[in-house]
Image 1 (cartoon, each protein chain N blue to C red):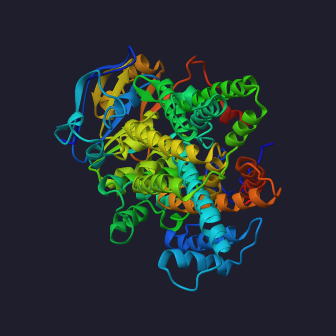
Image 2: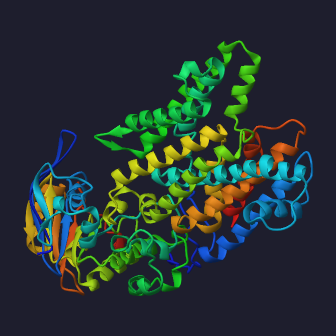
Length: 268
Length: 364
């Protein structure tokens, strides 16, 4: 088992954010965490790399409670890809990826020369080798996110944490990123907003609602129209994807007025 | 009629940053390529700076005197040349280099730990704290500050300001970068107000002039005896910060990124702030409040080599040293036989250079 959260509750100040959450990610498994805004997804994820300490319950990485591990040891076991944000400091792609070696190096030890192999391999894997000297601000959102994935790869941790990695990305970049992550084959815990992306790219989903996990299991079993109605307050219909045969959620407008027959109008 | 939908393939536009980011532009230049020429330039600048002054000394005489003292080689120079070069100018020029290097390294560290491009010892209130205690010592005598000398009083003031700023910027036991800057700026105003009150109430024009001169920074008190302490502090703290370059990079990438990269962000931030403040205290004690170097040199160097602290720290140290040596020469020669406070020249010289570079980097 790579990651297990048992009975985790998080409070920020005195405000309860999440309560009594159990969650596991097994080797090679891609697990999605979905839920409405403010349901506590990111807070739960942040307990894994100790940005938040649980008020109750515990988080274990590869069998060890994170509270017994040094921050460096945590980083050797779990890497983070956060959502795209404008960088304060304009590092180059290669500098960003080199940061991933941090948990493995001593103070003055250089990640160049022999130690650069994981960096080169990671750049290659996300197809940014040609962009290695480019600064982050000159990249597209999708390329920036791939640079962060490369940083996580260079970190060589068995577990990958993704926090809304496709935010701000266009559909092409979003699919590209999630396919890249899928093909890595690493244990992954991914916070996602888009339920169709979650259904397409995750083996298993957890649904957070008002700080509690209300469902978990394979996407098709979890994302029932009833659950989507209860948790997200939206009506949806289950369809089958005409190409992949996978689950496709079709959302109805909140006031389900009959849609104007746009196509017929235009053909007349 | 049916409207024809048209799709035009637009050439992909470069995706610029959405807001100004630090260290834009600049290619990847290895440290091993940049550092040696800068070291040579620093050495040359020091020699030239020693040779320039109210009495000109030929650069080769400067070298001869230095060689004579260091290795006892060569024919000794005249007593007067020896006196000017070795006892008067060299300690001063070396102190300028040490203080310049130190202020640059402090600026780099504070900007990364506060994740704010404006952070420097002034913005965090450390310099202003030192200024207040130093002006009390100058105006009312050392008895008013428990028998401390002006330097010691300045150092104590810097320490007190650091403790207060760190205390005020904590929330839930953690130093919050945005609060750090707000608390620092506010305290800076408070300390400056109190300093101005001290000057205003002193009723002694000479004392007021001395305080003003001290606040604007001066290297005129330099001697061989007050060089070792700041030099050792800059060297030790500079090297220890370079050993933590990766930590600074991680902090610059944001707290969550830092944590996930194995850096205990909150503890690391406090430690770095304390170390940077200690160094500021030492520098302010020997040179007064030299502003702008800590703000501008890190930015200049970031524009040139980017924000990676493994390169930024050593290069900023060298550039800071060169910059302050040049500034000090200007202070000595611009209004001869008077002397300008260093802080005036750092700002008047530095601001236009910086604005020009800023415009240039935005245009590219």
